[in-house]
Each structure stands twice: as structure tokens, then as C-alpha cells.
Image (tube, rainbow, N blue to C red; front, side, top):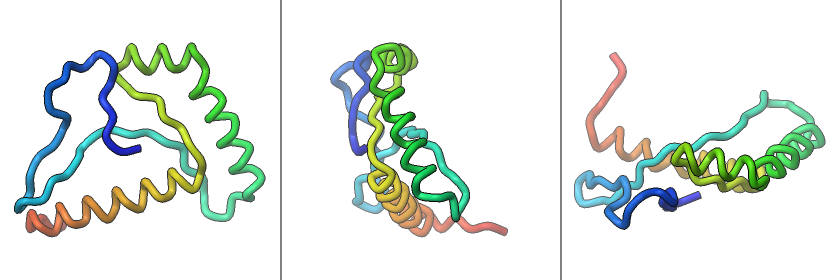
Length: 101
């Protein structure tokens, strides 16, 4: 995951902004989640099928034409990405002073 630029974008800056001297990357990402308790064999099968689709030339062309960067990866990589996004945005929300009323 991390910083990648869609092929159709120019060499200008990516979606970065500063919050109290800290740099944060902002971007879109998509993924599939399953309910807690879903058997590992089912999750592995779904991940393998989705990864296969994501690597197909048709899907890569479709995503690229929509301005997206197809990445794909393991379940563990996606779980780590979600954890890092939660930690990153928790800091941004805390620094902003935003709260739920």
C-alpha cells in the first residue's frame, strides 16, 4: 500500500497535507472484509480469487482507466494496512480536536 501515483497523474505533489508539522498521506483504498469467525480456509480462498482477479490485465486496465492503482496482497498485509490507517487517522483526529457530540 503506501504512496503510489496513478499512471495518468502528472509529476505534481501527491495528496499530502501537514498537521502540526507532521506529514500525512491521504488516499483511497478498497478491500474486502469478512465477519469475525469466518474460517481461515474460506478467507484464504476468497483472497486468492480476488488477488487473481486483481492481477488480470482486464482488471488492471479498468482500474487504471478509473484512476486507481491495483495492488492486492495477502490478508496479513491488508490487516496491517488497516491497523496503520487507524493509528494514523486517530492522531489526525486527536490533533484536530474533533469529537463526537
